[in-house]
Image (tube, rainbow, N blue to C red; front, side, top):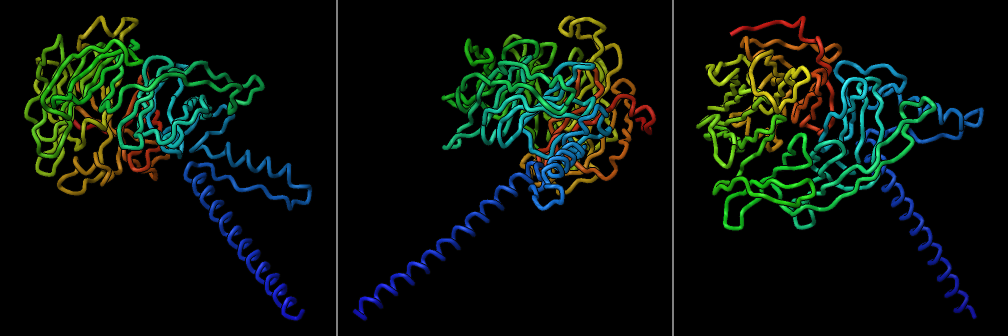
Length: 450
C-alpha cells in the first residue's frame, strides 16, 4: 500500500510539473506571437497603442478618443481628415508600396497606390490628406503594380519556384465616401476581378488611352520578344524580336513606343523608337545610358555613367544640339511636366512649341565608382533634392521645399499629375510613398544657366 501511494504521489507531482512547463511554454509562445504582430503592425505604420481599461471613467471613451487622435493626427501617414491640406512634401504612407498612379484631376485628383505586403489598393486625397482603402482582397508580396486606364491594374509577384506572376485585374466598383462628413471613412469596398497572365513577363508597359499593354518576354529560341496584347493578355501580336535581352519598353501618351537597353556603368547603351516594326536610333553607344523621352515632342533627357561619374543632358528638339546640364543624376530620377494641349488630344500633335519642363531628383552626394549598378540592385541609396529643368533655355532651378529640410529620400519611379502640380515618388530605401506639390514652388528658386 505504501508503494502504491508513493507511485500515485510521484505521478501527481510529475503531472503538476508537466502542466507548469506547458503553461510556461504557452506563455512564451503567446508573447513571441504578440511581439511579431506588434512589429509587423509598427512596420506598416499601424502602431497605435493597445487599449487600457484602468481609467477613472471606465477608460472606453479615452481609449477610443486617444486611438482616433493618434490615427488622424499622424499627418505624415493619414493626414488630418478634417479638410486641411498636407504639407508641401507629404509622406503619404509608411507602408511600402508596389506602385502608384494619379487618377482624375482638379478637385477629383486622387493618388492611387498598392500596398506591397497585401496587394490591396488605396487612394490618397492630396487636398485633405485622407486615405481610403478600395479593395480588401489579399495578394501577398506584391512587388510591382502597373496601372492602366481607369480601373485597370496589374499586380506582379513571384510564385513558389521563383517565376514572375502577373494578375491582370479591374476594380469592379468605385468606393464612395461617407455622407456623414467623415472624410477619412469609406462606405463600400471595391472588388478586384481578373485573371493571371502568362508567367515571366519581364517588363510591362501600359499603352495610355487604351486597354492594351506592351511587355517583354524571353523567346524560347533565345533573346526577347516585345508583345502587344489586350489588358487580359488576349490577342497577342509580336512587334519586335531581338537576340539581346534586357530591353525596357516605354509607351508615351501620344502612342509612340521606345525600346531602351537596361543601363550599366560604363557599358554602351542604346535607345530606339519602334515604329512599324523598324528601329529609329535616339541615342547610340552612351556609357551607362538612361533615357527619358517626352510625349508630344522630340525632346528627351539623357543620363550617362562614365568612369564613376554621372552626367545629365537634354535635347529640346530633333534639330537642336544635345546640351549638358549641371546636374549629376540619372534620367530615371526625372519626370517631364505634361504638355499643354489646350483641349487638343496629345495624339494629334508632336510639336515642340511651348515650355519644355522636367523635374529631376539629384543626389546630394554619390558613393562608389559603380553607382548605377549598385543603385539598381539596391546596394546604395542617396539623399536627393528636387530641381526644375527648362529644356528650351538649358537652365536648372532648385525647388525649395517648405519644412522639408530634415526629410531625406532616394527618389525612384517619379510620376506627375495631368496638370503638372504634384509629383509622386517612391523612396527606394524603404519603398514608402511621397508626394511633392510643385505648383509655383520653383518660381522663387535660384537659377543656373549653361
